[in-house]
Image (cartoon, rainbow, N blue to C red; front, side):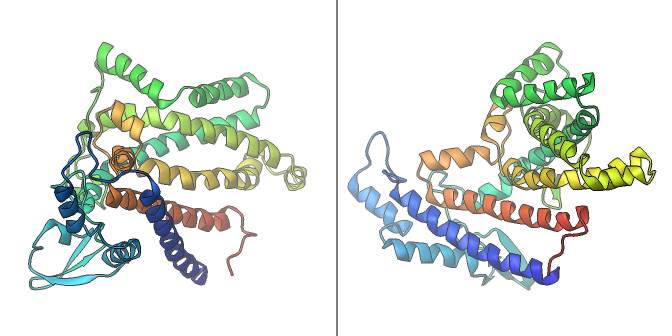
Length: 351
């Protein structure tokens, strides 16, 4: 297992390297530049800006410079002289010396902030929303899928699949305003917009204050985002469980006289959850790195809008930073999924 995880981490570096190269090439191939405006800037100002951010250099030199800033750690004394020296990881070593690592560069559209500042401030909010939404999706989807699978062609099956079809059919862009209108405007039970969590955070994303003031902001956006995910999980759980309970080893377990509860929990359910766990990996990476529509509807200051606005603004460092961030979460989530396979099915070995 240890060697398997080590190999996966080495392949992760290769994946990130290839992804960064493809992203760098594609964003340069898109027409336009980061300093294009509706009212065109003077050529001299554009040349000065390109020289400041090294955009006047050849593409290969720009790419190598970016890799150097991201991958090479630096030991610096004292405070940074400029925003360009900021890094995502700033670890104090001794006296005034700091280890600065992962410098994602400046933001061309937000001149007073670097990409590291954007990630530090917005990613914890998106992570909180994503974890809450995925928790709701799992708590609703898996039990609903199990009941529908075990009670096939009954009222429980039809009811559960009706809820699942509703969740898939009604997107967040429609569900969000409905929830805001009912619970935020008419009933006034929950705040219609905003986010209650404030720094400092525990373990990067868990807010230090978990009182009702935090959860009252979380419930509506998390439910709006998690309902569609729960529908996918429910349908997949039902289909997988229906396939597993018809296998020969399930018939053998029942023929031995095992109670139905043990047959379902110990034999059928664990194997039927393998496809569900497979889907949870990419789903986790997608929801914790920012969801543009949900954050816009509920006025949540997350990372989602930077995925969209960085492309329209040709903000190259933000594009690279957000895509690499998503790739890291996706690769790590898939690694956890692969390790979970061995727990769900003891026949799976990693040699």
